[in-house]
Length: 156
Image 1: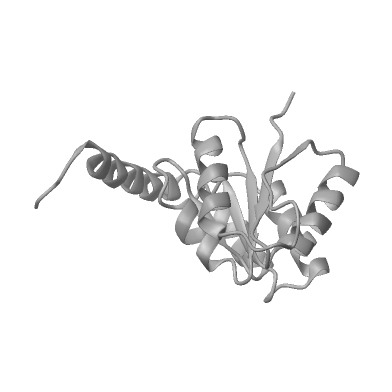
Image 2 (image 1 turned 120 degrees about the horizontal axis):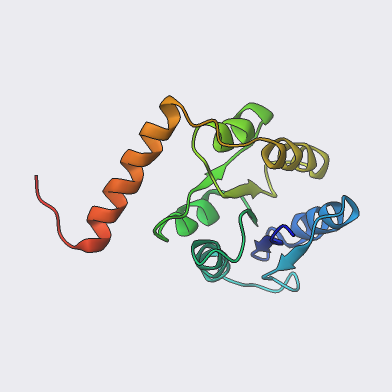
């Protein structure tokens, strides 16, 4: 059985997150909502880091994070070693986030992307698999650099 898709937002992304959650559930996906549970203010790093850590622990293979622009969620989630979050505003970027970069987390900007486009981006991203090939070599270099950073100071 596939792992549930994690979803989370700050207050700016709350309405889009709710729409995407309903969309995913109607398509038969299991979804685990990490909040925000309302449009009340919440800091995006709190949600992004919680979701990214759950992905890093293997609790989810995929996750979606929504804030006003998608930028803050992407920056915060990418601080967790082993997690690759990618911001997409168009179908090509959503596909490449998976096929070339093996991104487990898609970040979206609720103030940038309309709900119907967000659903399209989500569909494209979910249906795209990592292509491997020359992209695998590049992702491996990122993973190696990440490993160096986690194991201690590195000087060249």
